[in-house]
Image (cartoon, rainbow, N blue to C red; front, side, top):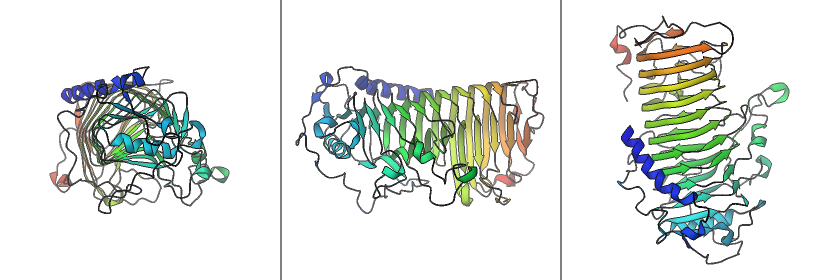
Length: 482
């Protein structure tokens, strides 16, 4: 894992040369547009051919048949190399930058030209606020492409201003790209408040109810079927739904991001990854109304270090196995991080009836500050009271909690391992776990059900419900298949 971290550090060191410079134009060749000042410059990026997934409503494959490969040098053309870099300033393509004029065409044309040159830089300069509509930025592009936001970038203000022709499921989509960087010193503002207040959202209907009906809200930023990506330095806030999603990607570095939305903003996950491999998330801060980071099926080799999370719903693996589906997640590490004022801490959640496996999960050096459900494995996850008991389950094994300390909210036990009746959780390791009540002297007993593992040290509070050894019948896990 240290080798992976070192690889990511080299990559980000190269990409950060771009936005740390106060004189951007002095570092690159400045590229004048072909049609300076025109508001009707070119057409949107052409959609992919019919034989490729539809990025408007794609379904990332659970096991991509040809996952993207990671080159030995993901940045063969250093963005800081003044001999090859070209800047494409959106102002020179007709952008107004007043926060209300539609600047979509300017961004699309700047993208089209930057995509065709090595080390091209699309620049949204500081001192301006750019409003653009839902857009798919499509590759493949020449190596070293950088999308640099130094000003404000935002979507239309709420569902009433959203163009009817545009998808309400996503705003900015980056599709089929390799070696791209999204960076800058600016802010990507989601204008999410009017979406959060739709009557279909939880507790937003009459008398605190939730109204029925369609309730699509756009994810703010989505990377789909891409590889060797870097996202760094930006402030991303107030998304209508998920702030960032990565679907079907490989080789992702996220560093020094600030993601924020109010504590009660619904479904505003900070970073969601699914069917994505080789991910590093470092030195970032996330506070929102849902999971800081959610890890879906098909993810492996994920390293999270130096995260400050909360208020939020914590860090989650899942939910997995919905609608009797197979889910596979492995080699996830979360370390040297803080979770505070959150409804959950470190959570693994699966639906009854699923299959597959979650294994090689490591939580290390985590500080809890007034957190409910600090350590939680829930194999009975359900969003209503109508879920039926089922015999199959996603197999959870090889989960280590090491040096987990701090305070918990006494409304729920700090440790909750609710494993399937038929597919036990195995090889849970606890070491140096010390969780004390935030207020008062109450220390709730941990809860375990069909959970097997080892306590390497005395746990506070004591956990007497964790079974030693292995389940008597290994047949319980013989059909999980991952």
